[in-house]
Length: 153
Length: 170
Image (cartoon, rainbow over all chains, first blue to last red; front, top):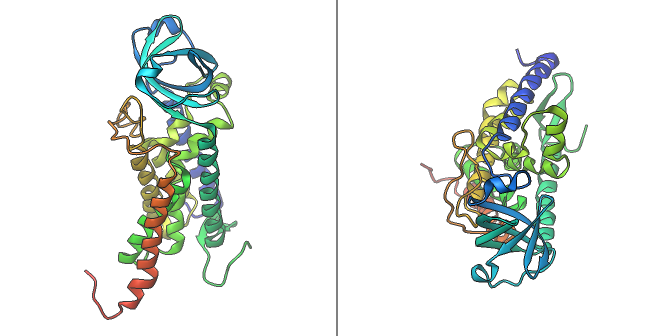
């Protein structure tokens, strides 16, 4: 049933819809959104992240909203600089302030490393895939290349 | 996420180790496991198209993070299963899931200030699991450790095992 182009396209449509349902469903996973109706969440514990825009006091840009992080000195001795990425676990307080219980600090270059190294990983897999598999356009199916069939067709 | 290279190296090591015991796990299928390890990080599509854009356009809740959950990797693996012939479906499904689940398991150990992981196991659970906080995604030693494991399995699979022709393996 699934061996023809048409069968596969139909199946892809179905699976695509399933994937769509999953991504929409994931949008309903409960989480605290501080960008809308901040006051509603005062008193709640949140884990949020953002980029440091000020260091004294420490303020981060969390999805467009600037939040002050209180109590940074008591949870970490790491130097915090503008541009660093913070993940903060704390209590929401009035005046767009989060009282921090714990913080993770990452500097921009650490993210550059992360993305560069991830790119290497992605390219390696892409290379292996292109060398190992070929597309049978007639059936719209991928199949392993046999020995001696290196390179794209 | 831990860095993608680490995830891919771990998937390589797991699949290559499996190939020692199961002959049908060819290098082509090791590649499939490595592709499975990438699936959860399709959530990074949020860097290209913001969730708000999709929600505004379609009027539904939406989160690319869905790819980084159990539900998401199963749905995404089905795409791979559809795109291969009947004779490869089971094996491709197995190895895609092996790679993807290994990615989720590694990410379940990431440092989180709250002590709880992301909701990786949705839809089975809407909350994450307590994490021992072993590493940050940007830790450099991760790729080295994973690379070491990958190198080790390569050596065993392609250098040690072929030289033990006269031994019987359990």
